[in-house]
Image 1 (cartoon, rainbow, N blue to C red):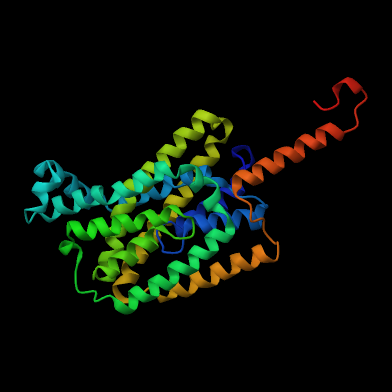
Image 2: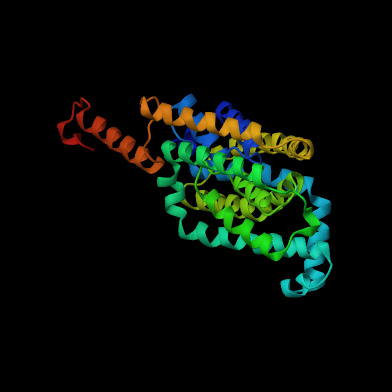
Length: 313
């Protein structure tokens, strides 16, 4: 596994740009980060690094939707309870509460499946399969969606369905924006409205994940001299992500998601081909780290040493 001490400014810049480009597009940022780090550096950057660098896109989306968020928070405070918001025509309150309620399933399952998310689910073969599977589901959604409803028309049932679908994003390769936009299309939302609600749901989701991982990394290893590199990577990811948000919302007004469907299938097939031909290791990050530690220990044991009493240390 690519440990914190192994991240350089060059690696941080490359992975930061990639994180910013893919965080809000329906193509799976986690799959891109894992593939790029393995192909370029021979190792998976790991879930912790990915989550910490997500802080850049978090600030980007907060900045982009700052005016909307102020209205939604005011709506939440104005109504006090989700029940009251649902029974009124207060659109801001409804969207605010629906965003929070739609995040609950992801939060619960994220805690329950944390270990598998960081290890087993991050196998390249798993990512490749989910890239392809969701692409096919997206294709069905494009064909069947009526796309007659807008953001203001979202109901508690829509928020619940899209929130439950977001749980699938815990599997790298599925893509959080991919599953939520697809669910929105199935619920009859326009492409732009589905994308906007997907972005709103991402705010509590990636904020919680990013801050949790950051605290966990600081507690277990400490950033130390790497703090500058992490801030640098997150800053690059944030600048790129802000541009992507603005572009993607404009794109979804006039275009469908088929270009992303084709791209997902191609990337998924590439991942599976690389695994099948042993070009990349299909082990989960934890297994890779364990093998590397064992190899390092073996090297120490057999290394020539003038003092026999030090063998095996």
